[in-house]
Image (tube, rainbow, N blue to C red; front, side, top):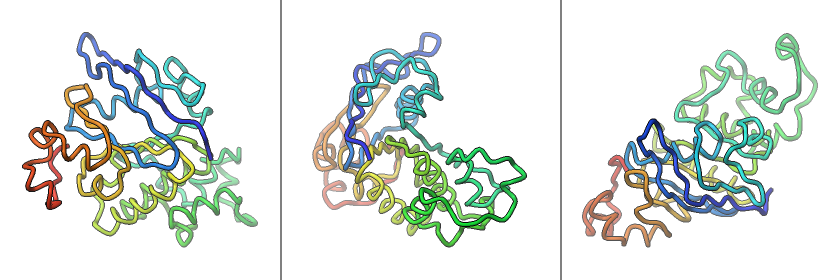
Length: 256
C-alpha cells in the first residue's frame, strides 16, 4: 500500500544526560520484514518511541519525503505510522468488531457501538481475514487468547490503513503455534507495507526476518541479512552463543 521507505539516520535519544540511542541508522522497505534485536536496554523500543513521537530525538526519521521527528504523535499517525506495544492495547470489554469500528474512526457513539448493525465495513472484513479473526467478530476482546489480542491490535492498525507497522515484541508470551501464525501474518502484511519488528525470540527472527539490525548499548553493532548477522563474530560472541550453535540453528532465546 506504500512505495515509500522508512529511513532512520543518526538517531539520538538522551534522557537527563543518559544517551539511550546514539547515532543509530537503518532503513526499512515495503516487501521485507525488518528486525531490530538487542538485549534489554539496547535502545530498540526507544527507537520506535522516537519514530512515533513518544520521546524527543535528534537526527532524522523520514517516511518517503516526510520527516517524522519533531511531529506531534497524532500527525505521525495520520501520516500512516502505527505501532503495537508489548502488552496489547485493546478495549477488552468490547467485541472484536467494536474494537475495529473504533480503530476505523467511524465516529459512532458508545451507545451505537452496542446496537445491532447491518453488514461490516470492507476494510474491517479485510483486516479480519488477514489476521485470522473472522470467526471472532462477536467475541469480547478480553477473552481472546494472548496471541489473538496481538492480532487484533495489528488488525486495528490495518483498518487505519497504516503504511508503517512498528511491532514491539509481537510474539512475547505466545505459544509455538501462535508464534508461527504471527510470523505468517507479519509476512503477509509486509508484502505492501513497511514492517519493523522489535524482538527477543531468535528462532522467530531466524525464520521470518529479511534483514536485521543488532543494537548494543544504544548503537548499531551489526546489520544485514540473517546469514550476515549470524556470521558476524561480534554478534556470535556477544549475543548468539558459539559459532557452532548458530551454524546448526540451535534454539536460543537469550535476551537478544
